[in-house]
Length: 345
Ligand code: TXA
Ligand code: MG
Image 1 (spheres, helix red, strand yellow):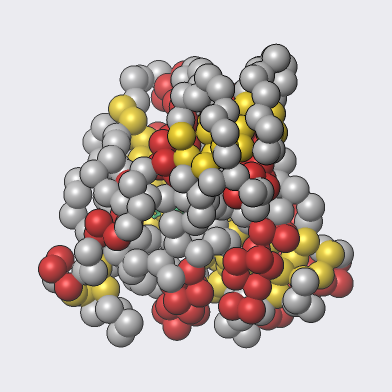
Image 2: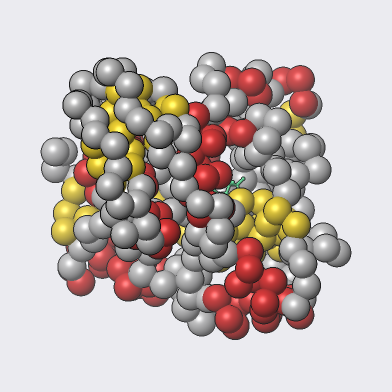
């Protein structure tokens, strides 16, 4: 453990807020996964976030707001946005919205797009930090680009430890999967990333069918706009042309453990670890973890990344994953599993 991990207490949260105000990077827990936070209004700080993660600059960041923060100063909140914010904020929903005139968020956080992604987290530590710092905070998941998302402080320490000024340890993230990203910058709302808030819940609130765009299907890790047009910038925040973007193919996998994944496994082959789901799973000689013995998708989501981290550290050469039903949260779980299993660079 490096010494920059501290348990989240009122004092350490105040210190973390000071660091953020000075332009530092702080990893903090949210109800979904740990975020790697920095002042979203300063391009230099946002650039540090991209550098710490090794994240391609055409992939925009989510901006986190304290409860009650006037989102309309940052983005255009149409009726749909107001409805969804009233119903799901604070919570695991990220709204992609058109930037408001005079939007204070660094263009780099938007990756040069005319939109900005906003979320108001529900986790008490995230909220305390955001209130204290009184700034919009850009925070992607606190993992190196393309790797497994962190649901415990130890995951952040292992993979980003020395690239972060401070890590607030708030224990396990209760949700365990990222927020749902819904694009409201277009006439027909569309889901860009399935997450903890299900498509069904969003449809119920908006009273319309919402398409889940396979924003990630061509180059899953590229996390491009679903219109396929990456807006990219170089280190000086100048727009660069498409062909200057380094091979998007190198981003073909995402949420990836180091070991390969084999999906829809009904048994573990010799040398494989097993990520099980449901009662009476087959045996694995090497290592086996059950996402939810009672077949509960909420429990499975909460355990997903932590169990993948653990099986990744086992002796196995491959992680075999049992089938997970597609309904409800299963859609988001399967989205992550498919991308984790996608061909590697
Ligand atoms: O649960 C979460 O959302 C976590 C916690 C820390 O809040 N954050 C997170 O951030 O997962 P990140 O950067 O790993 O994923 C952000 C996703 C990416 O798929 C990105 O492409 C998309 O949101 N995104 C951000 N801004 C966007 C924009 N303006 N237009 C389209 N997609 C956007
Ligand atoms: Mg991420």
